[in-house]
Length: 154
Image (cartoon, rainbow, N blue to C red; front, side, top):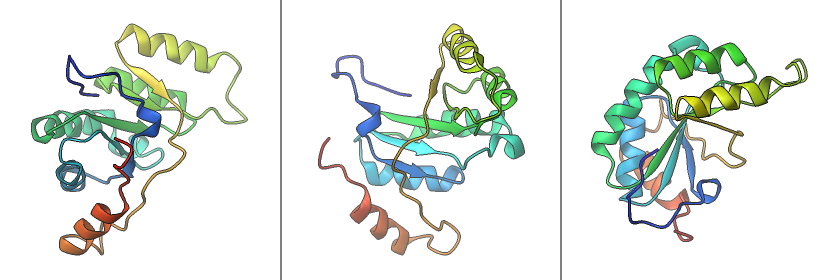
């Protein structure tokens, strides 16, 4: 998460969220956001395939491109081991959704571990703009996102 020191606190739950699949998609969303807050959200459980280091690396590169505050949320589904791996990789904002098989107390323990590493656990965003990145690259996707990201409340 990136924020200006003198800016008022951001209500991140009200900030538009867009599912991204990599560097180019995140850069496009940040460009369209044009300095307004935005949340970049990974696919659910992708850290089990790509690893937390991949997402942490993307976050670092997006920071170089961002004109304003953003949050890069790595979704670890309901798998505590993925959360631990993401914390070790340096991810700052992690989505964890306890499932029916998640033992009692795991969320509290993961939250404490995240806070100790200056990271945060988040619930899954309730509304995420889903786009088909493979078929709609370029101008069509840019137009779609420009029309569908609701920055009116910012």
